[in-house]
Length: 255
Image: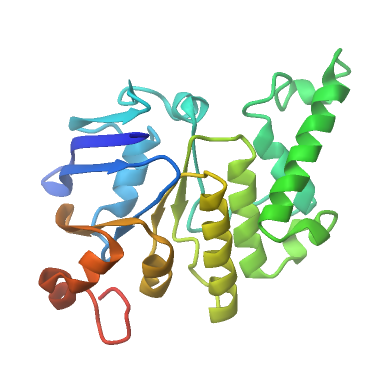
């Protein structure tokens, strides 16, 4: 099991943000967290990435405890994330954005990359080649030299995912990747996520678009006010009376 979350609990004053949350993410799978705003999804992401410290519980990546690590240490351990609000370098090209994500694992590092150090050129060539491969995998190879700001919104989402993958993480956390996308862009996103899974990429995502979730997820955890109300495969979640009653409307969107 790649990620193990046990008894994860977080309070903000008297408000329960996460209550005894438990789930496992298998390597090479897509695991989804769903629920309405305020259900605790982003809190769980922040706990996993070290941005928040849990009041109780354990988070293990490959058997190694993450609780107590700083965010940069969690990233170094092999977890990267995207955000609901795009955080691209708009003044850089598409390729340059992906290359910046690779410096987390590079020996040179982002600051040292600006200095004329021995071996820098060889490593930069490898990073560039790897970045171009990632752009091909998300369908952005032809846009490599374009300014990131000129891409359509849906392609910017894919670029952010490619940049997150550039550090070759063990686990990628995707925060509402379909937010703001039209139906065609959402379909392209779903296809890209499935292709990445086929290549062995493990993903944990928050998403409100239920059609996307049911298409791409291997396992789903449904949350309500910081607590689990259901967990299972897409088919099991769709058939769960508690989920149908509380969250799934006739249009297939989370209530």
